Image (tube, rainbow, N blue to C red):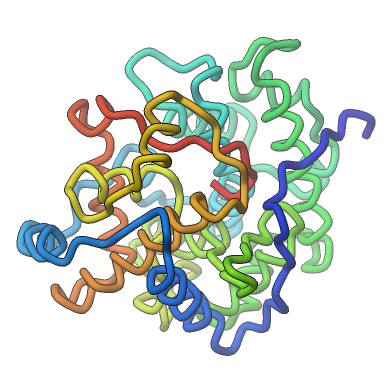
Length: 330
């Protein structure tokens, strides 16, 4: 391929050895450490208590693209893994051509679903041939156009996924089954892809977040009702999936507080730099806040994350600018 683009990478980040055993606890510990020494973001315990009382044990209704499907294990795995390989780009959403009434994330998800309905589940061979033009066509973006950088990164992510799948006979289902029903092991495997190595550094300490690698297991569980290829014995151990919407929803609820400088930058629409201290603190403090909510409510972090993400779709939450960062991690 000739359309590779420079990949936005966190400043100073170094991929931590992604050993599966204890990986999810290392994410929790890393985020708790950031919260304890954060300079740009705070957690308000009073607001956290109010929000805990407002969360419900039953998850909210699934969005259309999240509802269980009746396809084969092969197709479910192929669709979910391919989607989450490109489930990023919120920093580009302001320039994305969106479908009427849909957000950037839902526009992209709906476009890929339409492509699957028309042409079938993506294969490793097809993913290996992805380029910027292919992705622009699938996701309904003008080419050349303002979203070309993102479409180029999508293409690279799909080619990286194809390379990984060829290690598993070209099958996403085989890749998922290789985790032996462990969301933690699946996370570690998916995080070996270069654009999914979501590990920051804060005050010299590694902070693994692994948003997209983790959320893949959660989406597989949703797509299958938690059975078959979507059953994971340790699904409850996943952390929140740190992006830019869940922290924003927590901020609107008063749980996260931003220092004046950070708040002013976000209000002005300034892009944060991937891996800068403030950007890491926003995501890590959100993960830690969800852990505190989970301890109070006995809901799993993934369930809480899902509720917060859906709340973030409301016009009241969207009325306040959220942070934007051009990264392949969310």
